[in-house]
Amino acid sequence: MVAATVLVKARDPITQAGLVGFLRARSGIEAHGDPGGHYDVVSVVAKRFSADVAAEVYRVTAGNVPAVLLVDEIGDDDLRSVGANVVTILPRQRVTGDELVRAVLTAPARGDETLSERRRRLAEQVEAINRAPADGAGPEFTEREVEVLRLTADGCNTAEIAARLHLSERSIKQTVFGITTRLHFRNRSHAVAYALRTGVI
Image (cartoon, rainbow, N blue to C red; front, side):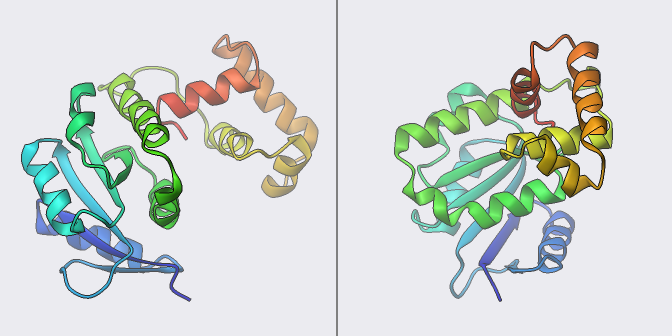
């Protein structure tokens, strides 16, 4: 069953074809690279946000289809011109496949947000893009730590995380303790907030 039909637009054909192929391989998503017909979401990919990118977003969405924007460079001031239909902004080079799929599938529901709620969330996403170390420096998380943080952000408790990752609750607690002590976080919530702000999850 198709949950979302996506139009992908990128500045170079290789990126566009690759993203279309990736999304088509995911259950519930139908992806196209050429405009025409009905689509629920538009995904626009660019290295740097600009007036041309803003115009492209508006053109391919007809001003009323939710858009997911993938960029490496975007300034705080650019938020005023991204367009009211941009519902998510993700870091082009660092976004994971699961994050992109989640953004695409949840984009249509973002229409229920108030404009102020959306602007606030987009501002946080832009801040995360701009705060991320450009050279890859900074704290590194293991794959398990990322999964624990992601599930915590989704509202799972220790027992639920342990069940999903097929680990003991003690292992989950040790993982959280390792994160908080190594990076001097006050608690689990502080760690999750940092991970969200910096684009780790």
